[in-house]
Image (cartoon, helix red, strand yellow):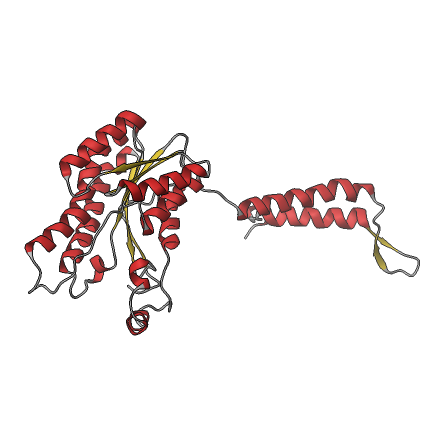
Length: 313
């Protein structure tokens, strides 16, 4: 390789410059011909010292690289009254999203989350609606758009389980889970998408599950709904990617919750045997990923399903 074509990384040049300055300004031979530091050199104290300080500042700032969420953006989180939804609302507010709308079936639960965020100096609001009711969702979204303007970040997180073996599963158990877990994502997206397209920006997260990837006995309804969300995510991403909108799905695995706290030690041990990480995840694990995927830094991640499952799938 010719010498004039040799690539030398900038960081190497910076470190070399510091070394040369140190040698030229702060090293001297004493009367015994031993190499010593001459700390009286003012050039070392000022110029080199400042260079080292600036380099350390640059290093520290890189370690604390922040996520950004634009200016005056609004996020709507369904199922925000507890568990993963609550942690997502908290993570977005704490991360810098200007306004967080907490939504659940119960005004009390999502209201408590919003009140807690407001008490900490964030800007949060609460709305109650049955997410399985398409008409009710449309009316609520129209109200939100009227009162708060466009919603740029949508987290379709609401979900329920009604487990049963297929031979015993009632039509009601099937339809309730499909309506709440799958249809609700369609209801909210269709109500809010047009404003995202007008702004040429949007972030949509659909909360799927590893059950939608691998299936699970006794959860045919839940698996079908979550697999449907994954397909919905992929198709919608292809429709709106050119408009500056990303659509991604997250597939949580065994996440610690009120429900998992109630299972027996034997059941917990059996579940952990299927998780290579050897432990359950936490709602924070999911919320942190959501925050990244809706940030400005993730604009080229689109149409993907990301499992948060300790390598289970």
